[in-house]
Length: 249
Image 1: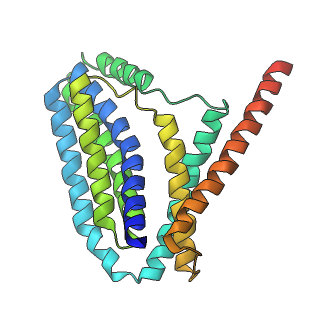
Image 2: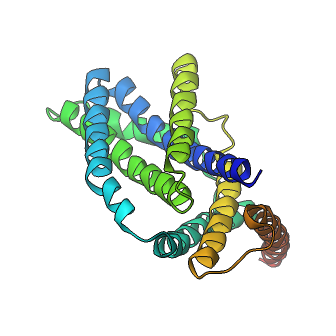
Image 3: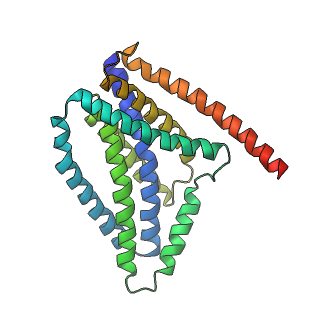
């Protein structure tokens, strides 16, 4: 039972986190293809995938040389900080302190920028470079997520399945509708992912320190619920404070 719980949470966390990153990369690649050329978009994306593959090939085997408890502790701390960064932004967005992320606006902004560069003789190069950077940067985050979510329980393969599923879903839906996936509730996803990654981080940091959690992997759900309640209370408090501040202003 514990094995299936660990695998299920690993795949789910990897899928949701990777889904956010893939949507952001797809938006830029699509903008390049529409405004410049699909050839530039394809070459830039393919080059980035090759670079990502090299990163995995070179650094992946090094993980097997690190003791499990040390790996759990390091990955746990990094994952906790990574998740808290997402969670902080999600709370601020939900409470109205910063603007919600809008894929349609991001797509329009990127399209306008690339359209302005169309007259430039380097337009194809600049378009390909934009696609390369988008896929590489978001891809590196996906690799980190897969390693962080999977390595601590030696379930990297399952985490990779989650990331691959996210890529397939985004490509399938994106190619069918031929536009950015604006209907994907990205801000909600980031909130949930922030909660999940922070929960994983706390859990694995404790395991790395030798803590014997009650209920083993089921404790992950406890951390998730506690963090969710705390975050929702924080959102409500900040939203009320923000409305009062705007009313006074």
